[in-house]
Length: 206
Image 1 (cartoon, rainbow, N blue to C red):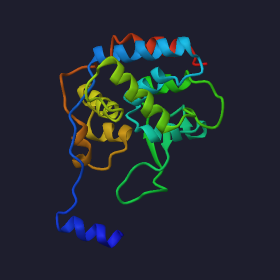
Image 2: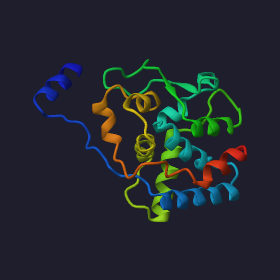
Image 3: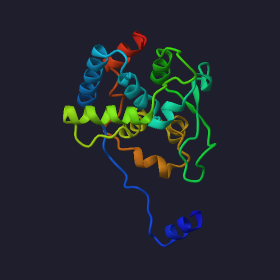
Image 4: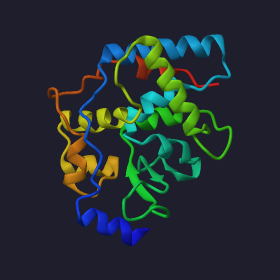
């Protein structure tokens, strides 16, 4: 299969997935946060999707990476985490990478309760289903959970981050792969006055 894949790639029969440019607007994120907050108020046992969505943006982590992070992977002093089995075309497993944690992402982790080995002990299927249902209910068109990673990477560049500093957070190994996530709207941090970060880190998740 590996040989067939290499041949198909050389012949142009396979190609990379089409790059997306979709980024969530703050208005859309606010709708999602209110929606997930109401669900959790009515059903406290439901997923803490507010925390998960915010962490996905500020950490730039993929959905499956988020669910694999363990408390043992966290280095609070250096504000870093070990990302287990990071997606890489050449390495399917064992590709563990240490990534920087921006301050908002670290604050969100510190607000999570220690209920087990994993920081976010939830399944990717449950997270994906909850996000998809919410977007459909709120009539938010064509927004995928992975677009939150795109948003987080773009935010870091808008704040003046260099290729090296952003890659240290996202885990990208080349500018070619990193730039597909980068579509800048304007300079500065559009989340500077975003009230949800303060609200989520002020109260611990139960």
